[in-house]
Length: 219
Image 1 (cartoon, rainbow, N blue to C red):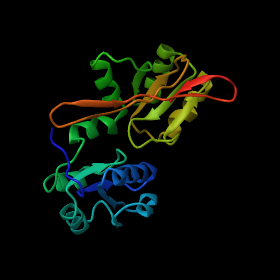
Image 2 (image 1 turned 30 degrees about the horizontal axis):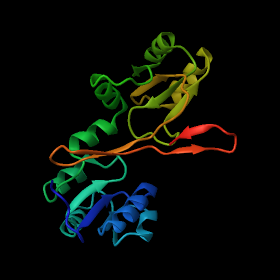
Image 3 (image 1 turned 180 degrees about the vertical axis):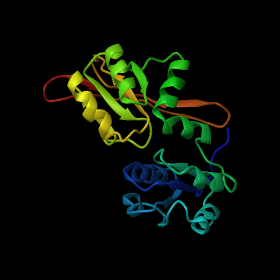
């Protein structure tokens, strides 16, 4: 199995809360992290080094790549141009295909469905007419989301009734979207898995917590 040697430097594109947690976890394993972030970087408080520069700054990107052994990212919206340059200089893990899939909700859902995994029912939406047809097919309530750049409620709007459709579509400014239907579920389970270069897979088992209301919740 190929392993990153102790003391190696992991370059992280993005300096938010996930980059911060990644830096802390990496330090416990004997690695150092170098954060590349155009704006304020909470991860910088716990990282070995920080580069504050735009993703379009080729000089800064080259210097960043020269200082690290491998590059990863803490969020999916890294400009393609930056990745094109960095990939020519240092290995990027996960690879570009994984990033391309996660950047677009339609590509992501199509990929998962193609593997036989179920998702919430969904439909492509590129116009108000598409949205009306999707709402008729999936039913309401439903969530309209941009296919790219939306997160934490941004680029998303809930449709409760047909009367909500015009305003919902107008709020998207003609961006490509996806309408997601609602599903009934009992609990949410998050599982983190990692795969090595040779194909080995390791998964962290979800933990179980009983809250004050006596309900068992798996996280």
